[in-house]
Amino acid sequence: MRTLTVNVARVDCVCQLWIGHKLIQRLPELLNRAAYTKVAIVADRGAEVWARRVAEAVKVENSLVMLFEGGERAKSVEGLDAVWRFLADIELDRKSLVLSVGGGATSDLVGFAAATYMRGIACIHIPTTLLAHVDASVGGKSGINYNGIKNLIGSIAQPAGVVIDVDTLSTLPKREIRSGFAEIVKHGLIQDASYFEHVTRKECTDWASEDLVQIIHRSCEIKRDVVQADETEQGLRKTLNFGHTIGHAIEGQALTCGISITHGEAVAIGMAGESYLSYRGGRISRSELETVVSGITQAGLPVKLPVALPVTALRSTLAHDKKNVGGAVKWTLLDRIGQAAFDISVSEDLILDSLNEIQPG
Ligand SMILES: NC(=O)c1ccc[n+]([C@@H]2O[C@H](COP(=O)([O-])OP(=O)(O)OC[C@H]3O[C@@H](n4cnc5c(N)ncnc54)[C@H](O)[C@@H]3O)[C@@H](O)[C@H]2O)c1
Ligand SMILES: [Zn+2]
Image 1 (cartoon, rainbow, N blue to C red):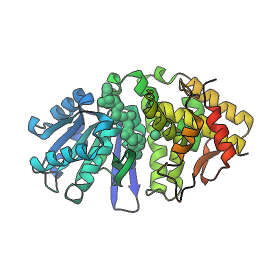
Image 2: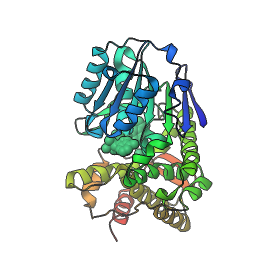
Image 3: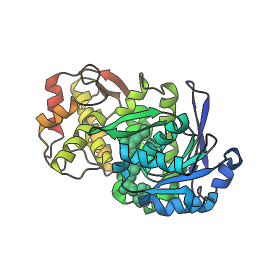
Image 4: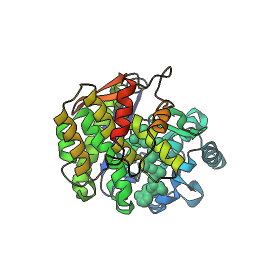
């Protein structure tokens, strides 16, 4: 088992991350059960098999387990209300613990419910998707979608711990593995060139489980370091948005056009587009751009849209990105493989060129 600690200066808290196999069985030794008056579980029904195992390991009775439907759809005011209602109905007090079991939608929803219930009670995430292992469950951002905008309402509150049991990936569809892997590739591109080279050596669904533990550990370490340096996203944390400016526009347009595209697919295409922008802006060379594009492809991730999406529509969706301040789009771009720069302005022509570049060949 590997461990990491997240130590943010803003608040006096240490969040422990455990990464390895068969960790759900070991929950009784990992959590300090005696420190809590009551333990409840809130889980996505899609991860029910894992939630049941957690309940068994920690001896949580059925009445203290809530299963909700819908993953992302539950990240709503109604979904949040249902979790708050459950926490209130079972009379959790300030010294209680909530265990969240599910993907990133679950850690976002349950993390926010726990951070706001009684002004914040302890929450430990037990993520069950690769995306949640390496990204969503680490760093303390939580929240819900509102008014058609992703994550518009939320908070930053570190969980008390994160138990990353890699065995949970055994039930996850390959497409969801690929989706999470895009964030792993991103970690290499923004922070660690040799890691990028390593993780893009082969198709991402071909890694043996033991190698995946190491990869998840390194990705969590990269995210931990960035979050520790800049918890509230004043600077460095913005580099984690690499690929996401175009990626979010793709997700928005895909939704409008009824096209199925995962977050990771959108981010992979977004990283290709934003690397092209880095090249055209004179930040990286042609050969670095080619290395990025062939690496993403070798990992089994897309660099072009599956079907054409109108450039003008993508461009106007970019304008609504939550990260914009005062209307201008601020980009995270590469200065080289393994190093990113943030808050970059780019000319309109180059933006349109990069949105053309990701259209199907
Ligand atoms: N807070 C953050 O820092 C942060 C970072 C990245 C993403 N996110 C959020 O994470 C969410 C995306 O996370 P996600 O990709 O995990 O999506 P998700 O939580 O919707 O899960 C994807 C699907 O997998 C199912 N599932 C979960 N675990 C499973 C398992 N072990 N076996 C089989 N099926 C399983 C779920 O039911 C769901 O249908 C988004 O809402 C995004 O905004 C948050
Ligand atoms: Zn992402």
